Length: 297
Image (cartoon, rainbow, N blue to C red; front, side, top):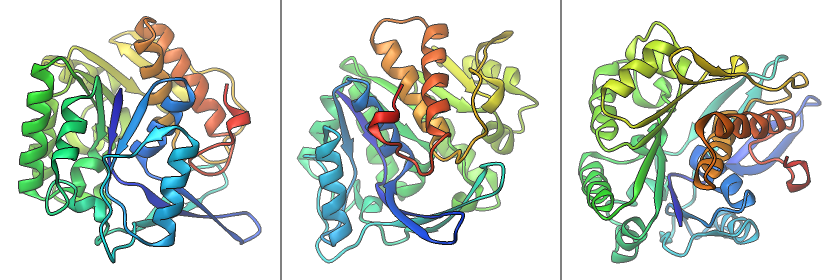
């Protein structure tokens, strides 16, 4: 079973005519849904409220065959919300309302033996920098201890930095400290060139790849947007020809799903990167984080 950790949120996106579309999303949730659609047994570990949106969120996961049985419910709490606005080229900007999200207490007051068992029984554990932002220092300590234990029993840990300065704040040093602890526990890193440059000052994708490999990570992919994905210095897997993007939301999340599904099916990194590019190309041709199932490649 693949276990994805993070936050499931209500998504409000503005259409070209000014109307607002309501949906659901969240970076690791998007990856979980696409992994399940690609035939991988997948679970999602978060915490939700008892509001109507949380009920709909669980129904969505049921419909996508994503197991959420270990995710607790916080009484009298509501799930987080974010809005998306896209410019004419499909690039998006986000505004968040999530400070009181139940997901922030998953490794605090909402922690349980069921949460612990979900992590320790997973084959592959996937999380992001946004996942790390959710938890306070004691929560991070508990998470890192569980990841350490899970790796000793054979689990692989996959990390996508997905750095968002708006969440972490203007000083990158505390963020670097948290990420460094995470990278020490990472087996597969699915980085994004722009994010890594913003956080670490890398001069390019090759520099990012060299830095992460030097940190002891066995498998590194650096996503470069329309320029493809770097799987080794000097080895870049090009994207396929795509129509003009409608919405780039979840481009990286869907790439991660395509890549991991292919790797877990025994394909080499270059073919896995092609699979990730192919899925991301479909996703950016539709509005919102989760495209219709009929549009899947």
